[in-house]
View 1 (cartoon, rainbow, N blue to C red):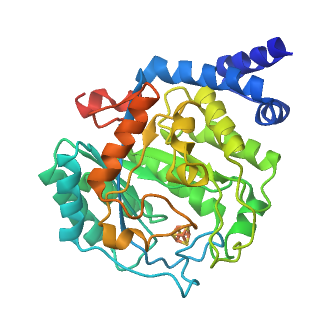
View 2: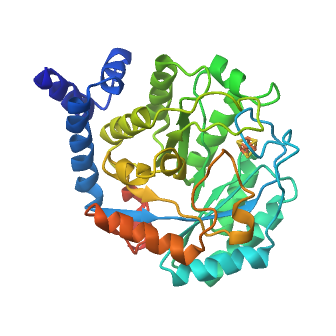
Length: 355
Ligand code: SF4
């Protein structure tokens, strides 16, 4: 039995393809087989990243959002969400302490907040690049026009995260209100890639109505897009959303999918997400041991952390940036890995970043 499973794992790695049936077999494997899968994923990750884990300092700078995604705690329809915006100076001060703590990437993440017009974003990005020339800026601020993306890139942002959430049209419509479209989401991702960003897409595992076929469609889409980063974490319900009483996604399935993605995309930047650490106290360590190579601790000021709640029970909302960073470094060391002090670009971008 193990031989057949080993062969399937090798075949996924060799062919950079998995059939719908193969995916089901892997995601529903036994615990013994799981170890074969994870070991193969770790070996591939080590080939490109040794045992280095890249840290990204996450700055959640606005909890306002004009959208109403059914799964999200800061959707505009949630009247109970606490709203805040950080000023440019506050964002810069997060970067200041972040660089002192060893961070070489800042991820500016927020809802789709019309207050942050292109000019404001460009001004923030160029100020960060000017003060921290050895650090990369990643934006995660949703759908904008191709022209806006171009301006952000010219201002110095080099990476962009935009989860596609699901590549299946019908499933997308069950997770989002009618005014949002999968077509535009995909267009944004292709625009970003064409401009030259290192692009990240991704999904939540176990969203309502998600089937195995949907996950397979996600993989097919990702193989076509060829993203540089893939963010996946388990779906965790937020009580004040239409999906408030839906069951959470499976940690096991998330870990197995992480491993499959590592086999299919050997060089991809793959975070062990905070959602994974929320669903399981050892989730981030388990993610690394399943092939992940990125962690995204929070650099937002402690007084706003408890307000950026996309889902319930989010971890690390009480810690300061220094505590978070040293806790994560220790966790990484304990499982035999270490935190890198580089910007952690995708291997294909290393040369252009001067590392
Ligand atoms: S998922 Fe993003 S776009 Fe959707 S409501 Fe939440 S913050 Fe806004």
